[in-house]
Amino acid sequence: MDESTGQKQQNAPDEMASENRELRARIKLLGEMVKKIESERDDLRRRLDTEGEKRRRTQTQLTALLIDQRAKPEPPGTGLWLKTV
Image 1 (cartoon, rainbow, N blue to C red):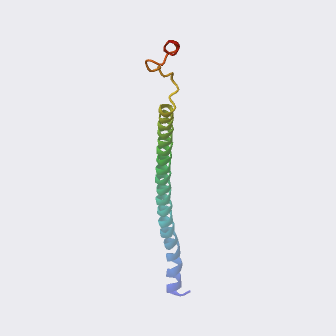
Image 2: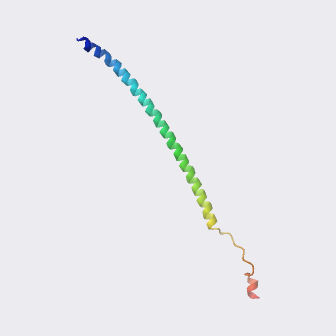
Image 3: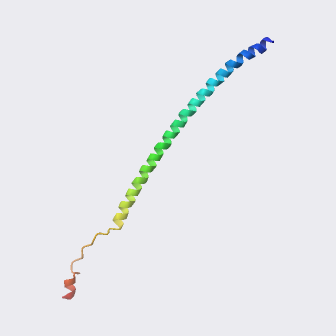
């Protein structure tokens, strides 16, 4: 067995261990990124829901103002008794 071949065989486990550490660090970083993205998504959903509720409430108020169904008082001089006089 050649000395360089023996050295390569010894380095292989060290390289694998180093690569595994690097991959684990990347996986951890990706997991943190996923959590951050999910948190941002949830925040945006909450904001969208809140804005939707505000918009519906405002629309209801505007509709109520436009369709005011309350009885209007009759202007003076238009009552029934004036027509018969």
